[in-house]
Image (cartoon, rainbow, N blue to C red):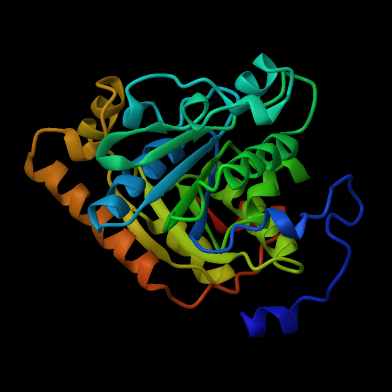
Amino acid sequence: MDNMTEVLPKQADGEGSLQVHLDPSMQIDKAKVFAVYGKGGIGKSTTSSNLSVAFSKLGKRVLQIGCDPKHDSTFTLTKQLMPTVIDVLESVDFHSEELQVEDFVYEGYNGVMCVEAGGPPAGTGCGGYVVGQTVKLLKEHHLLDDTDVVIFDVLGDVVCGGFASPLQHAERALIVTANDFDSIYAMNRIVSAILAKSRNYDVRLGGVIANRSADTDQIDKFNDVVGLDILAHFPDLDEIRRSRLAKRTLFEMDGSPGVEQVQNTYLELAQTLWDGRDPFLAQPMKDRDIFDLLGFN
């Protein structure tokens, strides 16, 4: 981390945009915190939920926070669409002292604790505010005191400071991508966002998770240029698609050889992340350079 700090000059957080610096009292101090990013529809929620279970199988106390107005990050863990933090705050006219833990935290499969932050109504407000209110509630109720791992499952591409706000809390950011141009193009923007946040926060790039891909040749091309590596590779198995339809994590599916292999990969990934490894000091590419790099000539 020291090397990264030397490379990037300090500047005002969100310089050139409307962002609010993180209140130090809202910092998550004790748990290992991971933020999962990637192109919309790439499988971030599937990845996050199964990774949460994998950590729990290692004996860790896990909290998963869904950061999407669709509030569907944790439904394979809880078997339901949970009410969002914004929903329950609105129900008490934003008097958070009137809320009980069970109003916004649900226990999912294998003890994974689940929270859906939700989001403002479409076209209004900022996702960063929602994430901030969620962490504030969790701290007020001391729910982070005994947590080993926190996973933020963040929606889609990073287009503003609100989308990037979980990076203010995370130790490592993980990028989920497929072996195609659009996914890698979005990954490059996410690398830029993480680089910007790393100027003032502890977050660093933890690596890439290749998902829904038989091959990784295009991902490898990009990684070689920017300075990244694949931590785990999940093929395009039909069992993964069916697990979402069945409202189950992959750890609850029948143990076919393919499913067992994916389960083992998640367990290995969780162990790697728990043990820790040096961050990647990746540098994003220019848009035109990605276009020229990827695909067939």
